[in-house]
Amino acid sequence: MPTVALATLGCKVNQAETDALARRLSDAGWSVTDFDAPADAYVLNTCTVTHVADRKARQLLRQARRRSPHALLVATGCYATTDPAAIRGVPGVDLVVPNDRKGALPDLLAERLGATGGDAAAPGPLPGGRTRAFVKVQDGCDSFCSYCIVPAARGVPRSVPLAEVLAEVEELLKAGVREVVLTGVNLGRYESSGTDLAGLVAAAAACGVPRLRLSSIEPLDLTDGLLETLASTRAVAPHLHVPLQSGSDRVLERMRRRYQVAEYARRLDSAREALSGLAVTTDVIAGFPGEFDKDAEETRKVCEDLGFSRLHVFRFSSRAATPAESLPEQVPPDIRSRRAAELRGLDRALRERFARSRVGGIAELLVERVSAAVGVAGASSVGTSGDYLKIRIVGEELRVGDLVSVELAGVNADGSLVGVLRGGCVGIQ
Image (cartoon, rainbow, N blue to C red; front, side, top):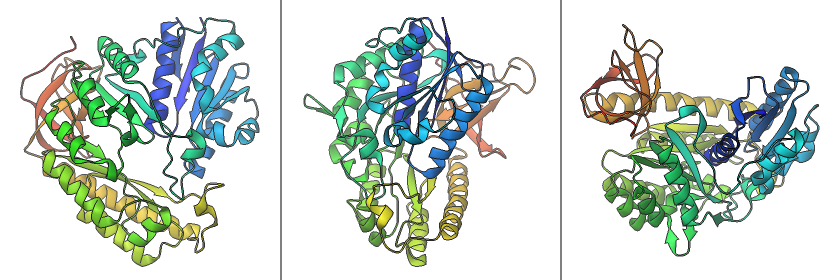
């Protein structure tokens, strides 16, 4: 059977779709490998949130073509959907597959390579022994933020039926997955025959998931009902990613965000009151049109005051056919870059502050990587806590997929935390 190399750019929804493709191909007997390895076909799942994402996609496609001149080269995803001509302009691209045909990729690959396509309705186990899996439960968005091209790339909101989600979760658990991340373009809009996101969380947890995480949720979707469910569901990780985008009410209005800073802060307060030890990460855009120095300073102060554990900083990138493209008072590129750099500096400080605040506490660590030197001096295991911190344990013989209770004894030079095993190891069943 052929070998297919897969790579993903962008959001966790893209990653979930790539994971599902990998499982279907693997289940059909295909070999699935990384994008920098020799292969019969290369499939790149693209992103188009920024110009940087577009450029990265073109670079990876050119590199794959140089690596394997005769392989099948395929581009799919959001960039392939919104600007297929640009993708076709990359020398050597054989096939451009928009998002609404992404599910047909196994059959399209089989047709081109003369192999079988696999059962599209029954994805098999996640290849590669990974312990965390992304499950796409929702697609599309109709919020129409002024900077965002996602509605054009992904279409209107729609949800995966609850039964299909739960079937996928159960398959992943059988394959040894220990953490499931529910993901969607606008996750709070999930709805399936009367089941909302809170109901989905409860149903997924009832499958026996050791750890359950939400990928990203809009602040106005942090309802009392959802928070009550998250708080009462033991498997839920104490971490939420809640996009802020700006700490200036004036800029939020120009972005067409549907809240002000005070409302955002109230929702975070409610979340932290409901979920003990909650870590909150966020997205911030630097240099949006009409953002003055005062607005940028307000954003910096709000991010510091709200105590985020991590910032995902994006330098504003104009997208064709979005309202922000033609807004007056466009910020010069050098100022955008400077403001983004300042926010990234704040991100480093916030990460360090949050990590140090956890020293002396207890965390549940999911082991994701074990060094080859297990059993000898210097052996180490690395994984992620429920509140999304990297933790390293040295000198213990653990396995990928173990869930262990650790005491947090310090911070390493790379920002990861030093873990000391406390017992309570739960291995893969």
